[in-house]
Image (cartoon, rainbow, N blue to C red; front, side, top):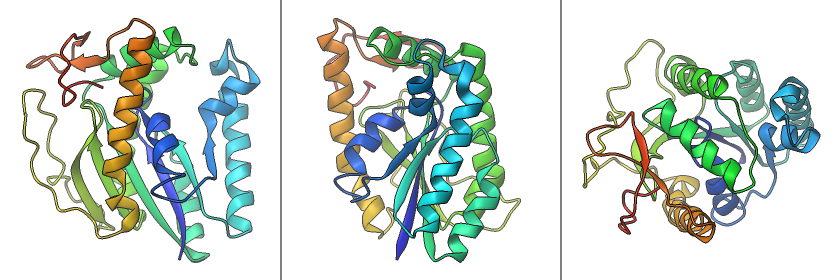
Length: 249
């Protein structure tokens, strides 16, 4: 069956790093569309000034790919509801739509990670934009997107490698997300969650492990330490010196 993979989550969650490992290897899906990278290409020093144009170009590319029946993936914060009309249309064309949401417990962690990304040569995003996307993305996931995609999974992206918090298939609207465990920075053994039988979800764990190693190595090569959530203070990101991979990001 044809497939569309949505790599979602707030800025700084590690979506692109994960996608670069997961899509060409485990998922076998090399076609990847990313509005932030489009914006950075249009205006490397002020990508926020061309965000609207980049978003339009991204939507046009998604329409072109789906019209020719290609498998593809795209990245989004889910802060927009633009895809709510597109997903059912894709499903009507025979696509199975799968969503991977990389969750961060606090927007300040996202802001700190984006700042570190800039120090590594990546693109910047204004702090107020990050905060707005963080809130809206999680809200839209709960209220809208999980009800229309065929299958979804939520991962704790504040740990490295990211670990699975919750999975699900299409559910009726107006139900709660009790299956999505709250972020617990002091937890050393995440709650066991039933993993999907779908090979695309089965393969995500290995990709997250490689992505975590890549992110840590890039940071340390630049003389930086990975950003972690301080135990007991999830809203206060900090750099750490521990070499324990479970808590780095």
